[in-house]
Length: 125
Image (tube, rainbow, N blue to C red; front, side):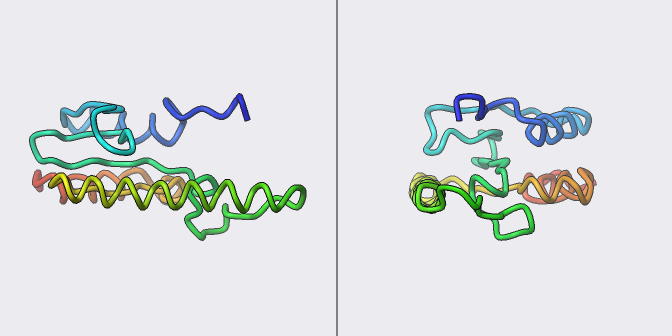
């Protein structure tokens, strides 16, 4: 587990590259916000999380419980999901909007994810 990274993941890089290519300005990994969002648009008070389907238990095909040590993994993933929920509530209470981009959505095309972000961001063209 020491090799599991929380920053600079492949899905996160794909999203940030697409946002930069679209000319959007943003910050990454704002520690001052609950949940340390991957991408932050402070002027719109929008936090974007780029989540791995397994670690945050999205429910798609990538969410397959390992066959060994299931008790540990169930507890670990349940804590991750609960923590995510707590962070979303805290963001909402601070007046921030949030959205989650799931790792499996990247496989369908980064253009769809970019379109969703731009709709929320208010930069439709």
